[in-house]
Image (cartoon, rainbow, N blue to C red; front, side, top):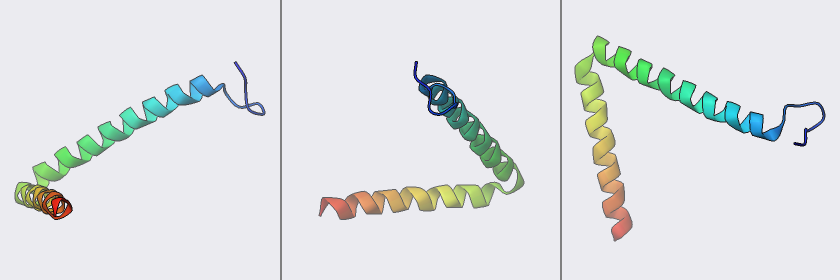
Length: 63
């Protein structure tokens, strides 16, 4: 394996990136769950707006 000026090998950096992504997803999930517990109607409304925006975008792109 080659290293870049004393840095860790590229494969280790790639594994670390996957770990960071998983950690970020866990934090995002925890944030959503906490927000939902505090104010469920707001989260459901935001989800409905997001779904409507995606549907509108898909319909607009098909034209």
